[in-house]
Length: 343
Image (tube, rainbow, N blue to C red; front, side, top):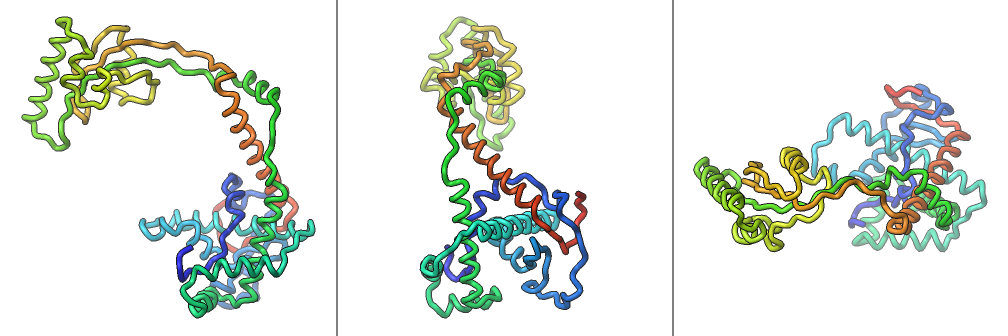
């Protein structure tokens, strides 16, 4: 935590990160105009949404945007469109956190005064002095009691999160195998080719003469190869690529690893065939196709452990999404901000 900055760490953000539901998309939500009793534009008083009547202010949204985008806000120019997107995302996060907090209270989650004070002391340690801590409270329109309430809310959300999702989901070997069998195409290894390369590297911003000299050198090497000279030996002697230590051997690669121009030619070669001199932004290349592997079915035994972990992770994320969706469906959410989004 940076000294001199006061904020409540949003422990619910790990759960929020799985969300894909756009703001204003829930049918239970309703749009409205600004409440009549709001007579000031003060961000700490301006209500932008309510979740089961609990207000969320513009100030809360602004603080959340600063928190989740601190680095990008400091180092890049943010467009108006991006700012609006960040505001909407922050508001959505705050709504869900409010609903989670309400659910925690309904299910009997309690936080002791000791735990609140321990968390408060952790925050205070990030400040050089008590005076600066209090100034930061005031700057955020908070007093100590209000801030302790925010801490109680934070810890309550964390507690219900741990209660519902703290225990990992475990899938049986049969469930993992069944998924694999039903989705075999997803696990098929694509065609691969094994190449050797000789690169005559040309420096960036080189002169026309340097490019011409490099091309002539590559053409000389190609002539030697056509005369029967060993590709690996010439690669070790002349190539600028790190693969020179292995005689230019680049190992097996699949489509998407090379520049499209070079890749098209590489895949068109026959095993043992050598290309012409190829020019890229890096210089001049000569490639040789050493071996070709057709598409292959992945063996379940090779990926079962990783697949099991991946599927369990996906299952947990889905469980979180379903819980959040349920909270929103039961809630009465009203917005007091303009939006072009439709239900």
